[in-house]
Image (cartoon, rainbow, N blue to C red):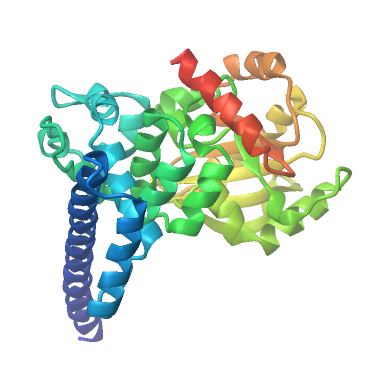
Length: 365
């Protein structure tokens, strides 16, 4: 009787959450449409030179004095709405979207990030110039402003709209993703992923980064694996944001009993999307092929003794400060275990260098 009641109560909660989600989406859509239409009106006035920047300031003052209940219409906010309209109504952005969502086919790389929500791309891509694209509803106006201000290519902007939706990113989280080059580290050509990983998890290249930034640890250049592990445990929330939100932390130094010996996996996670255990091995030195053998041994132990029947093969990640890409490619080419090598960086790469790398990446597409 108690179980039945709990189930029934759970159904009520599901109904509440379902409608709350719908209400939230509806509110977000109206906020975006308001920004779009205000931005279009002001943009047209500015382009026709009927208005100047002084008039925009006067408009802001008018709204503030006559309608004090209307918040969010400062001079800078109105200009953000103009930018929102101008950039997303541009032919360049529209062509980029149509390039990835054409003929009802979800294209690789960027588009794959959210194929589960883009069932009918005709509803997402609307070809008429100046028309609001429902794709923009995938994230908030605050996130859009961040994307427009900090991203320098239409492809990058499209990526972060989709990624912010997929990972349910708030502004602070999105800012970090842009700063640590999530776009480049997810979509670059991957030689750090094993053949086994690609066969078992074909979407791995767009799910796992090859570079993680742990600047929040404040690590000195010389540090121990223990200091690295303890720092990651202490800042697990930030670390999981680096890995991806689908990761659930299970344990540190997870004990694996094999025969009469006991081994310890540095960090053990569970990935909800892949329904698989993920073992992360931490190294304070440059990647060495012998590290891969140790990790594969741990994965075998996890699959035999820990993995449940409804779960997929365990995944292994070696996290090291640096690696020789040729050595990594050799090591990965014959590995049939789902493994990958990722580097961790103690500090964020300067914004100027990030822009250079992004330009190089876009030119190689």
